Length: 394
Image (cartoon, rainbow, N blue to C red; front, top):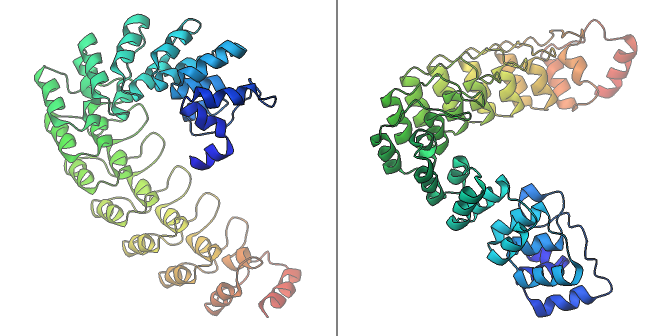
């Protein structure tokens, strides 16, 4: 931040709303009133560009705001009003509202700033919906309760209540006769509980009869969601209640695939112990052992092999595990795979062996090792290649 202010000192003046320091800047011959600002410590939504007036709105700098409006009649944009609800200055917001109608980003920023008066104002005056997921994300319980008070929609509130990680809130809504099976277009209460990563909430919903096999509208399964959070206790709980280990979500992602991507050996081992298919073909044409090799996680590779992973499986591009290891110049893994039956001279869909594939662009260490184990070139290896190969190995 300090580096940014050193590069653009006017921004620090605006942040401090220092009228006396701001005047020399705007009266300078070099000052460009409509300068477009492309970067800075501002919300991601506004990564296209901002103006000086927008920055005044963001910081709530009313004196600098008034100077720009008076001297240059600087344009109030939609972004100006949106940012004003973050800056929180009522005078700036009132001025912006004269020319711009608020939108959902204004509500998001009002929730984010935890200004309950702005939240209520936008809801009552402009009927802008209070986003419960936004309330949860920014931990704005008061805005959540305003929604509950205005709508009495206990079912939707219950769906998002676990995200606040307040058990008494969930219990209160349950006491009001909520339908615990409720879900909206995005999620169910179970998925909110999984996102909160709290075992007690997940356990409560399962005890009430939550469907642990249902997918949400993001095409996620409860088990894959739990694996993504690396919570082994919740994973064990879901499995103990019948979660299907070998069922992918609608994106084709399996629990074991997600566990490998998260590089969590303990979860991979747990899934295998409960029957996860270690030779399952993923939608992308890969297999568990391929993914583990690509992640360079030798512990998971060893685990998979120890449970019978097929070391000669080829993905949809005809790449076998041995080739992946050789390409990564990993002699230890190459040796491991060969010791467990990897076919060193198997030809891929192009008629090439591992030695062919790596010959021109990997170290002689791997090449010499493969040759010492009996590696040969494939049938398509030409005489020209053979003569070049001898030179490369010397």
